[in-house]
Image (cartoon, rainbow, N blue to C red; front, side):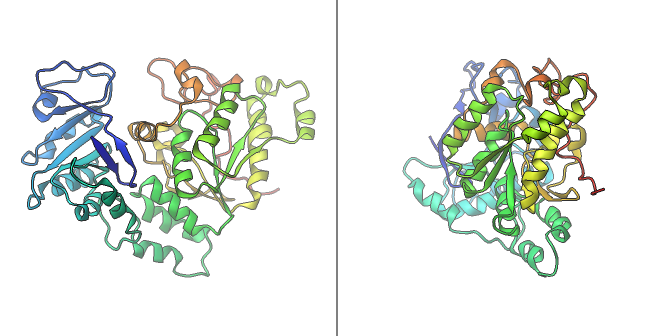
Length: 398
């Protein structure tokens, strides 16, 4: 079955429909009927979806969101639009963050309205020309009314650009409010529109989850500057992954930066600073080189998420750190949504993900995740820290 996503890409359905009397496979994303799902079919280890009738209240699903990756809503006829209301309720009233998919008797001209109601994808009928649906997505780029999809409205864009006397920093509060419910794709597009050309960069560690944001960047503007910090202590697998991912995505401006040789010789002649003073090591090999690299930019894009916890749990969409404006397109995204990006685009995984690493930095300060730990608990284990310093507020010059 062909599925078209809200960005216009066409993908194969990764979910397997399971009959009510059939066994549920352990490692396959499954799609169940409402009755089978509510009966307690929680034994599946893979992502789970449900086909929800349009004559049942979506409130019944709310207690089960933690085990739902997909909800399919049906349009049995052109005149039956109850699924629109269900989608808006799931998104706006119950804050469902999984995938919403439409199915049934859907016309091309309805698809955009479905996206505005909160749908992520459409199961296209076998007799329909799927390219027509893709064109319907690309046809519109300006939206005048707010809706459940969180797209930036024309009014919000005008407010952000209204008065040229305001600097980019002045616009941070209004941008943050306008983009709070926007998709990562729209946040990145707005960053590119708002920041003067050549003054915006994306900083990536090419770590466990980095490919998702880099994929979006490649789709929006593959010439966007991408900055990668090579500390000299990175895993060989990370360097190989960087090269493979750059080639896979077609990124054209990836800049690998390092600490100055003179600074390394002066501050860490024996290459053991990490064991004596981790904070000083991070400053030498990460904070200082990145500060230099960003001196030619007004703003940068990060891959931080609120679900990573710690200082990141209250992460804004747009912020000012005292030196640069920072856009955080993935701030409010969920782990399931990250996984969905990987599946939809068939993105390669970091080689160390299979070895049990949930977060990867430098070799001396990265360890495998333990059962029940948060994804960043393996970083700087036992050192009482959760950040290297590049995301702390900039210090004023002495």
